Length: 141
Image 1 (cartoon, rainbow, N blue to C red):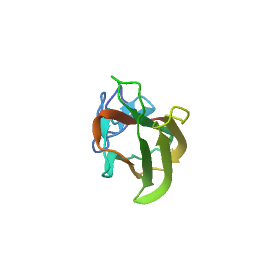
Image 2 (image 1 turned 90 degrees about the vertical axis):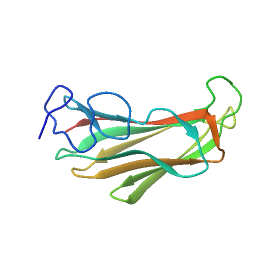
Image 3 (image 1 turned 180 degrees about the horizontal axis):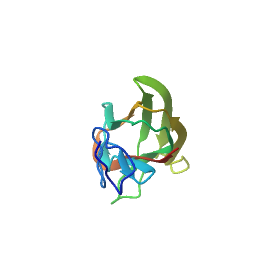
């Protein structure tokens, strides 16, 4: 297998040594996947989609709520779905519609070897100006 991001990790399908995208990226024993920002949509869409390699990962999946960076007004309600090998392991509801609501949901997970990981989202609005993101960062052990 080829090595990326400073070596030490196998390059699994879709990995990229830096940047955004739905794949898994390696830097030494650290791993990450950044969706990049995306607009609110009332249609469910996958934002992170990768398969791990031979080494398990201790990670945090951060579901970042939707807001318009040019307007401090209300955002949207969203539900993020986290799946391992097609099985839903959890939902994260993030509300930015009301100012008193949390705008970030974090789920700590252990991802087993050779696991297909998907994180998708649906919101209660269609608005490209209200943007959210998904970040997964962790460490192989």
